[in-house]
Image (cartoon, rainbow, N blue to C red; front, top):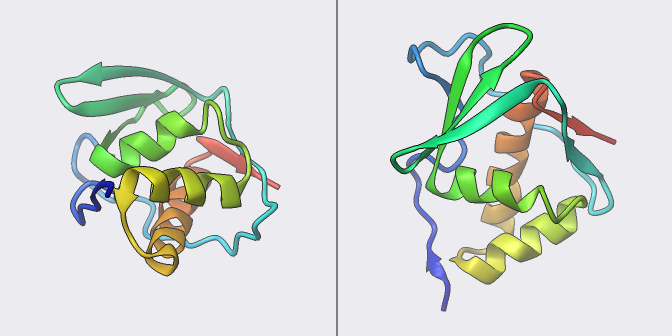
Amino acid sequence: MGRQWRRHGRTRLRPVERTNDAGSFNLDLRNDSTIRKTDNFVETVVDDELVLLHIVNGKFYSLKETGRRAWELLDDVDRFDRLVAAMQDEYDVAEATCREQLEHLLGDLHERTLVSVK
């Protein structure tokens, strides 16, 4: 059985200053939707967080636990259905929950121009 799917830190992309200037945004993703990281960031790991610096707007964002893992998987997985399957391989989560939470995370990342979706 996979790791437990944690509610905190998995989908909330927070600016380091702890303000939420971009509200929640869900994408309507299809199984064959392609997701790619853009070139608008640099990243580093600080403790257990992945910190992204948006090089256009100068803001820092952090991803923890499952959000961080989804981001890391985007290096190898480019389709939404494959990302869902990869997360389900690693976490004990229902498919519907996984899809919903990934849509939320990817919506936040897309809204901040950190990923492109086609």
